[in-house]
Image: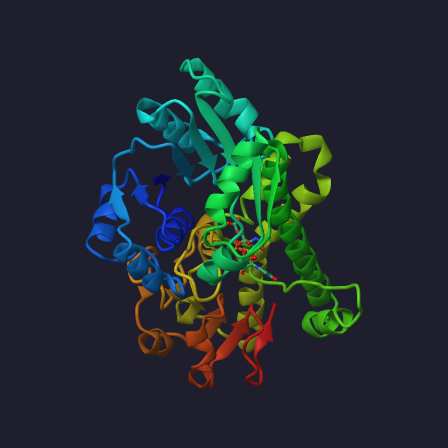
Length: 406
Ligand code: SAJ
């Protein structure tokens, strides 16, 4: 049996995938409400194919509980935030999980850490905790790091098809865990050591962050000198070795906007490009705010209460709003003591900010200037409703005449 610890965006789909491929799985989370929701037959977030996977896993007998189980294999998928001041990874949730596992696990257990951690985290923060509790690593507890790579918005497909990395102290244990993931994973699974696995995951997300920052910097240069950044990127990308990403209103989510900071925190004198890239990405919400004010002046719009932000999530067609550019923009506005702009997002049902709407038509009837912060399918299918409005499109999805871009 496998006990999956942490039933969030990664732990839940992983547990469901294992269960629906014939493995006995118990999912554990400290959050009672979340466990109750799952036990009442409902998933806790929206994702293409997740409900079907959930039903398959239920039929296969998956269980959800707040209790840690007595078993020989644990998969830990808990958050790893970064310390805002030191920028270093904060492994406190991983350590809580390890301590709880040690209270119940039999000798010879394998603990697989899926949570993203910076290189050396397991050496520095996890091994000492295990040893302090009298366990011998490699005998009483085997350690494995198997970072995930799935992208929100396409998680179920990517869980099945992405290549994976497994880092282990002991190759035989690595191969044993590879066999478990191979029960559903159609991609190639590479077995390596733990520190290499830690580094590859952080590097992958840092690569993307740096490349998004490059696109964002181009957007700023082009705005400064009145050039069309999208046309320029389109043409550049026709070169066989150039593939520039898309500028946007900022970088959100719990991965690309977080993981590169781990490297900055651990190697401050060696991470100039990464540090600058993170700063550029973080500056984008304020850049959008400045664009809003410039356009208002140009169009003679004086009433800021008639300006609205479309989209609150960190990207299109997901319901995750952690670190979202819209929240960053609102925080920036708050610094200037301004009344928050009106906001609407079809994916966010609860009230999380002031002046939030829950219906597109009601939102549109209260604003004259719409800022598209997220390119959800809903707005793509309703662009005709934006006719006669002033539009700032930060995602380049709107082709209506007169639309402003980044
Ligand atoms: N963004 C841009 N321009 C782009 C691409 C993205 O502005 O060209 C923005 C998005 O709007 C969003 C942010 O960047 O705000 C991040 O979105 P994303 O779609 O690039 O990535 P995530 O954070 O949803 O998922 C990433 C993925 N990592 C990589 O592609 C290297 C995913 O594979 C990882 O599993 C995930 O992080 C994770 O959990 O670490």
